[in-house]
Length: 213
Image (cartoon, rainbow, N blue to C red; front, side, top):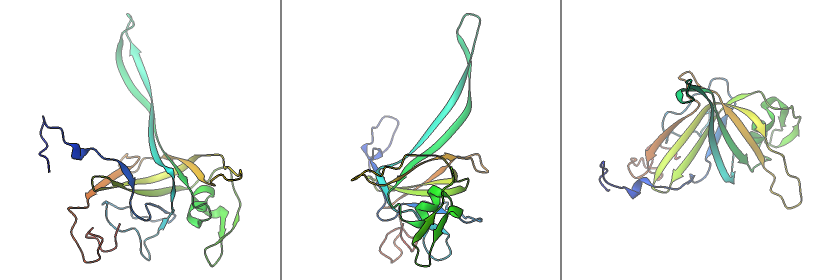
């Protein structure tokens, strides 16, 4: 480990990002949702309420922040004061598992998707845009061995991409979510953990949580 000082350059702080192994995006359609507060606590298991949304496209996912800035100028034309207004944060992603019930419910709304007893989607009755507000969790693995969990506690579909049905085209559901702030004024929050520093709990995943990430 390189000592981090005010004068040192530490290449261990440079990293690329990617998904964790296996499922990395989860959504919850329940009414009383418990949001994770750590990067490693498990979201799987009976009664958790979290559903796996499967694989994303190679575009991954993107958060964007935009704001209108009001500029107040003096008589000579110089800017004296700036003030941010109308800030908006969005989440953009493309789901590739378009026959997965969870993905269909995200795209079209829970009440517009019919699933049979085997978990197969038998009917979709679209509305213009689903009005549901959902929590979404996305786990990432940095190349320097850090897990980062992004928690979007109140996401609402704002826009959907065109659905390509051309021969040979990958069928995806591209969605852009508006991120509404939570009770603490956060559009989303992140939690991190070092894999190398996590304790071993005997299940072989090395995260100390018992079920893996």
